[in-house]
Image 1 (spheres, rainbow, N blue to C red):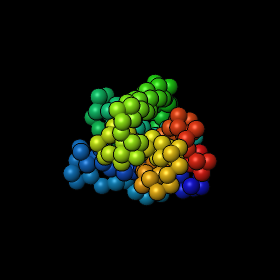
Image 2 (image 1 turned 135 degrees about the horizontal axis):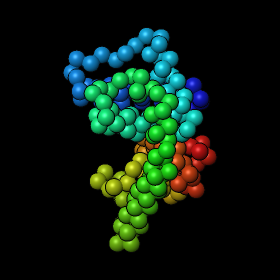
Image 3 (image 1 turned 45 degrees about the vertical axis):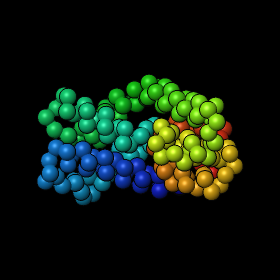
Image 4 (image 1 turned 90 degrees about the vertical axis):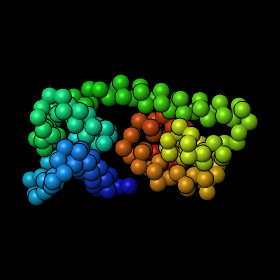
Length: 178
């Protein structure tokens, strides 16, 4: 993905997450549109992208904040630099949790391999608590392009919106995904 495509994906993810949250609050919700709103969404996407922050995670954080402290979920709050800085401040803890999650997923796979299951069977088990990025990385490490192709689209999305996963799984990922 080039920079414009990534920024566009961030804007889309932010709008989708915002719209989903607003529909929970108001069935008659209409998305704010127009040049001013688009400029705010673009600015917010740029801020999140520059800090390598997840748009869906950010929107959940702002939604929770607004529910706890305000009487609404307002665009000026969602797009404020102060809110982005608050979310960024929690990033180190989020990265620790993400690293623990990946470790757990890898341990789960190793445990099942230890019980005699094949890696292919584990990766294709829809009920296994392993996300698409980990499945994709392991399929790449296994050098099974057909299996990796099953997980690539979702893994690509996760790797764009959770950049820390690239660092955690980088040894197994092909260069094109880094």
